[in-house]
Image (tube, rainbow, N blue to C red; front, side, top):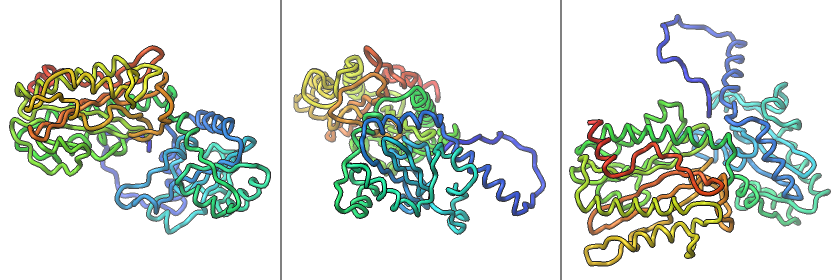
Length: 436
């Protein structure tokens, strides 16, 4: 969600009384701000054209409905594939495409629902075409008859497997097979446009500010949730709308839990604090992890293990380029490169190699989702944005270390988008000490 941020200070004003006309005008103005897309409408049209060129048939995608996502707790969030192709942020919309045309269906206006969640665009509104970016905007009540008619002249029908559209189409067209459109859309989503890169860089920069704010506040005796609150408050204050994922602030033994989100433990002196926290800004996610000593200094053992993780990360980033893969057991695999590095350095207390303490993969795509859509059969290609995040988690030593950066795959290598956040152990110690 995007919009203009208010000035920091305003003069006091007398209470205002609005007429019904003024309230409606205010609602319409608010709707325009809420649904002002961060990407140009023409780019969404280009994306849809690519899908239509690659899929010969009727393609159906459903936008999210407010009731599907526990909106009272988390707020409405559009289905990512639907947003990628439309930029639309209101609930209940439906997209239908064929190689020849595009239809956009909107639900009827509900006064009771708008009272709680704000005004919505209706298909009969005069500006429906301009605001949606579609020339054919129809009422949702016409969806079923329209799809039946299109299916008569097209041999195949497509939806994203497992989605609402897939199950509804199977009921609507019981004699037709519904093919999966997910792979085609995922391949498009994996290559980021210039506009997407700018939005992801913005989310990354704000996330870096959040990590720096956490370092400034970090003290033994604070609770993990206090550090998480500082980080979340930082990117909300920068105009970003939400967490890209639940914040992970794990101290001491909690850092060994890979997706630890309780954040309830008190941070003790001498412990490491793993902070895996990212902002979502204008619909795009960031994902950055740093592991920092609570007291400002690494112990000798902590530093030894930290430098091994850092070396593994540097080795994987240096190898990242078009043609490499995220998974697998070949020399082209980033996870193998990282694990081989860790296995070749250091030992646990029993004298064993440390590779077995890397408990997860080291990369995933990032975009509209923090674990963004991709086709696992495809190697890395120019324009993809991925993370590189090796880690070591040794329960017997109460040490969990993860270092994560976001990188853009370029024509012949990779560029680190989050390089402004220090990760050398000496730099981290200096930064924490300086903040204090």
